[in-house]
Image 1 (tube, one colour):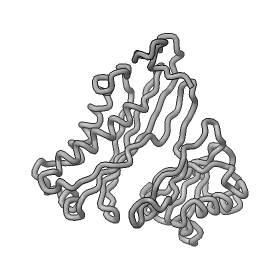
Image 2 (cartoon, rainbow, N blue to C red; image 1 turned 120 degrees about the vertical axis):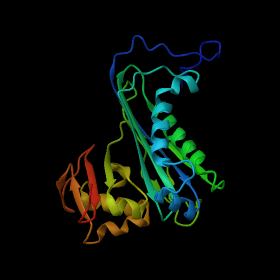
Image 3 (cartoon, rainbow, N blue to C red; image 1 turned 90 degrees about the horizontal axis):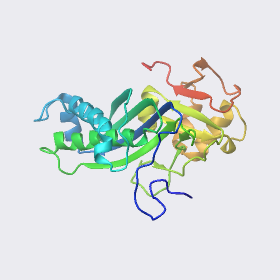
Image 4 (cartoon, rainbow, N blue to C red; image 1 turned 30 degrees about the vertical axis):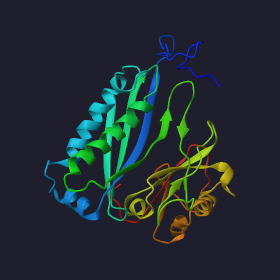
Length: 264
């Protein structure tokens, strides 16, 4: 393994990317901040002393992404074309889930920009709410996926219950291998809130059959919470086309599970 941020003498250096070809680079990162239920309720009702918590955190996250090179010593200054920050309020776990997506056409990736955006968003949420709750905990800041560049695409694998977390908590398993054939799975609307999972990746090698039925079985083996996907009220679409258990799957297909009524 070669560490590109070290020179022959073991000294830190900025990697020269001038000769790399430009390509579309994208990255998505997530994180969460846990708080007391009463704190989350005040946030929802707009009762925090410092004002609009989520709007402030979104602006801070975007600024953080754009200034990543000032915070992380060996990062390049990048002309980001997109920084998108979303929040999901989770009553069941009394937390706010943060998602950041960054994009550019350039010579180096934007993973650090996405991770910085999530980190700054969580820190800003803490700052905005600390007057009423100093017990808040920031955790699970992680890269979910990236695309572009010589190293290719990366997707974090499906969450697996490890038994190490608290009651009802889902912990992440190992990372997927680069180039491994996978199916991208999205859980939408109420289903996403119930499972605590928005977007995951299932390697073909974990599926007994390469169809929706095999995918459901693999998901259930990974986490018993997915057993509910067999319920008649859960619908399925492959690449935005309605599908059933016998629908075949190929590498890089996008499969969405959702309740009959959803806002997307």
